[in-house]
Image (cartoon, rainbow, N blue to C red; front, side, top):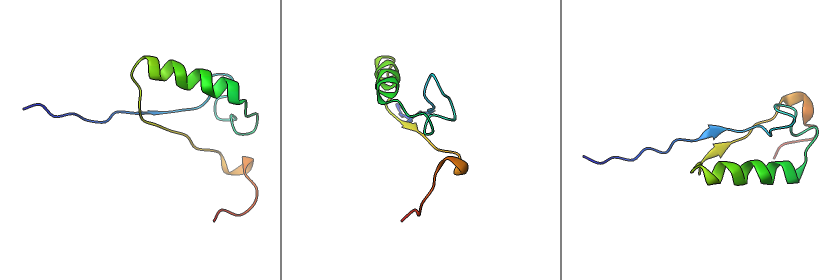
Length: 58
């Protein structure tokens, strides 16, 4: 039997870790995601700490 499972990673940028949204740098994120794609990672999640976000979520 040949079954495939999707395996992904939790992602925080390589320079600011969990503070990536506070100090967002698109070029760092693009470089990181390119590096992940080169090793075959296709699924990833990102989250932010609640104290870094303001405003309403709709």
